[in-house]
Image (tube, rainbow, N blue to C red; front, side):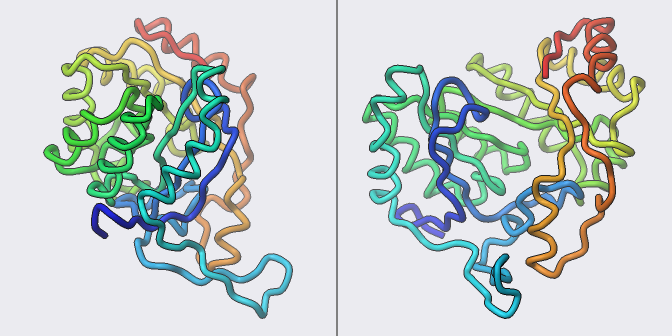
Length: 259
């Protein structure tokens, strides 16, 4: 994909969970990871996929379409007054927004030129040059750390964690606002020992605060519509109260955690 056109599978308005204030979230196709718990499995592939219609299994619908950068800017600017009143803005998500880095960088530049606060939700799995290019265009970087153990990271996401950690360290060194999030997934990284290991991994990099994301099953239906296997089928969801001991474990190791 080029800089003028990007492949988008959703544009979600009035989001309150993807950065400060009221935000519009632009979900871009393509991701180098294959997290077992991914709630947007169709986002892994850059190509347009066909999903079964939830109301009629004999009907298939396209999961995404191509947008000109100016069209996305126009849609986002429709809610400019809400951004200004709430301290919000636009967040690029996915998938992994850096897969379409040319389009993402141009979109971010145009939004910032209009005075819009920008954020990117990322896995951190991108070539350092690409990562640094996008980092220069955002007011807030939101990066998920999936696992502290290199081998287990590969087992559950398909790739090792070396590159995301390198990029995270670069973002911290750059000095801009960075929010580190950790998805807490049963059977994957949900023990108190895991919490301590995350803290020991992140503090030398300069991370002293993290947001914990309780595992949920919001994306389970999408696997059915894609006719794909879902590795987390039947795993119980977690709730905020389930992570109280994890918050304390992080605190015991010098990291402030919140849910």
